[in-house]
Image (cartoon, rainbow, N blue to C red; front, side, top):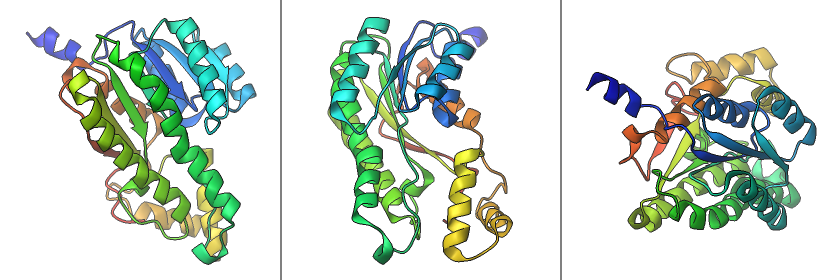
Amino acid sequence: MHTSFIDSLRPPPGLRILVSAGASGIGAAVARAFVETGARVHVCDIDRAALQRLAADVPNLTTSVADASVSRDVQAVFDDARNALGGLDVLVNNVGIAGPTGPVEQLLPGDWERTVDVNLNSHFHFASRAVPLLKASSRNPCLIAMSSVAGRLGYPLRTPYASTKWAIVGFMKSLAIELGPHGVRVNAILPGTVEGERMNGVIGARAAAAGVDVQAMRQEYLQKISLRRMVTPEDVAATALFLCSPAARNITGQAISVDGNMEYL
């Protein structure tokens, strides 16, 4: 009984996984984690060099170069994934960019539109193609949408980013209702402040916009977190693994924060 319970906390081996924007950061951590469980993983990313580095480092990984905001690129990813995997059990839709930082009256329309194209429209492009494959799966199929703690809190000076992350949560909750009768679960993960180069860039941009020192801005971020520490990409990957395990078979329609309890932004 004890062994059976522990086994239920792990994804079963052989799952067919597609990870978008998976060449670095959270996406790469998710891809690596699933490979370690014995999954067959296909990763797409816009960064060809980063994809090549990941593929060289992780055996048996298949890849596609794609701009997730472009419908025809996403179609090509699914063509590649079907050839490589023969079907799909899990989609981890991890695409996202930081978008511009600044007061709303100073934002450029093109920057707003690019953020919406990448952060939100990509989720439609991937989900609309993944759903028929997930419906055909008999292996506890799951769609995981990567949102952000900015999908539950207001985020001054980052309105394009926050708006798309809130929208992802609404998209996920609606899909969970739509797909529940077909046995497909849909959840969102909301990472908080994640250690790494991208967060360093965000903190730097926010510091510049506010006219303060970068280290002071970093401390300001930490003071907003109850645990006073950032999360790691591996923390987020562990949650993705759990959501694809038998233990999570009745978890759907949930926005799960992995953020050390971010109190405000």
